[in-house]
Length: 84
Image 1: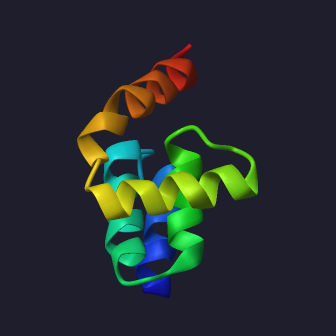
Image 2: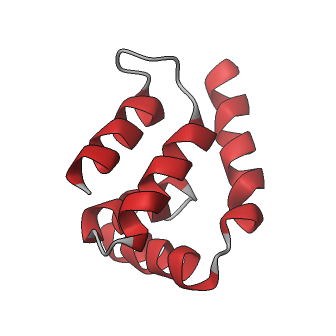
């Protein structure tokens, strides 16, 4: 789990790889589905909940509801902000 979370973090910030929010979400989700609370928090933060409690709650919601597709616009918005 920790390796998946670490890989996701690399994609999220572009450390050693090209920044790719969709790839980050994929790896955070894999770790989160295995019960990794940090990955759940990171997944929630990726989807827009930047305070810790909000991020963890949002990450758990995404994992429990399988709502990855509903968060895609937020990932696209982050990509657009980075390009600007």
